[in-house]
Length: 480
Image (cartoon, rainbow, N blue to C red; front, side):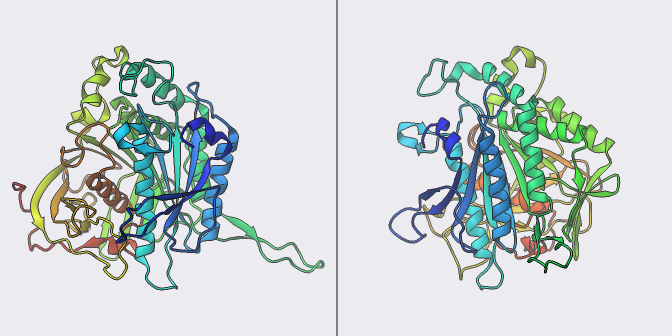
């Protein structure tokens, strides 16, 4: 299973935890080839791998077909549907399964993505402690390509001179019909109608009608580095082609519209340390304005306009700030995360050692947790958000302290932003490839909550937010 070529004959897996939290054996993975039906709230997730060649074509249609059927099966098998998360990796990465850190073998981002999927699966199980309410099935889709070309000379297992070549390859894949069609079909399969026939009618009766069996499920698209470039290119193509479809069954608390018409669209597209040209993001913003797209979440007293696309870049990301600009075609240009004309928000470190109590101690899988605070001001299109993130991993010490961070819109609270662009300090992401550490992962989950997808331990979206324990939430940043 280590080499990506083997996925051509088996690209669907069910992944379960090897050891529950609290036991001496560290948590790991049990990998079951092929999708296996699991009971609700099981400690497992479904995973599909879809690979692309350097020319932009799929390695095989069988992978895509199996992935789409996996999403459908997951939605049908759970009364609450599925949570689908798509990830596109970047330079130096691949679809190699194993991650052997001491020896540098395998792909750490594939391993990190699976860890995030398990976190989500356990969160779904933690949300419900009774037998009536049940969490959704978690489905991961890993879109893979040759992040390290086999023919280039290697140093410590990598190809450091291949940046320009892989950048051109990523652009070729992104511009191709294969990946654009794949993502369009993922959206349709996740957000579209699941129709199935009613029990058979007597012979003299009309055929039984097709009925809706499940509501639309949340869909998150995430990409790192050149993988983010691919997603941003595909997102622009989707908007240009008018691919947003009429909503089948809109959620009660989140609405995406184009020209006033409800549409089905990914809940959030996230670019992590993106290698995408800032011109792509500017074109995305223009298309969103041209098509009069808007997004609104509303639940009782909480109401604001969340993002459709978020670009998060580390201030310490040397590759997208410097190396990217050495490619001849990029001279004089910037990536989205370093083009200051695009910055919409600031990310500030506010206060150390804040109180962030664990929400559910009755069912605890030993996971890290964060606290997402109520947006302020209430009812503003672009409020401020406070997020309390842990200072250390619970695997090191069981009861972590938390530090409070604030996301603030630069243009005031009344200006809506469907696209968020901001940088984070090195304590969140220490460099280009540091995207799956425990703090950064929890920040991503908080952004997904903000976007309108139900996450964390909340049974309903409105319960994602917790009160800020200060009478005045506008205090200035302080030392940490």
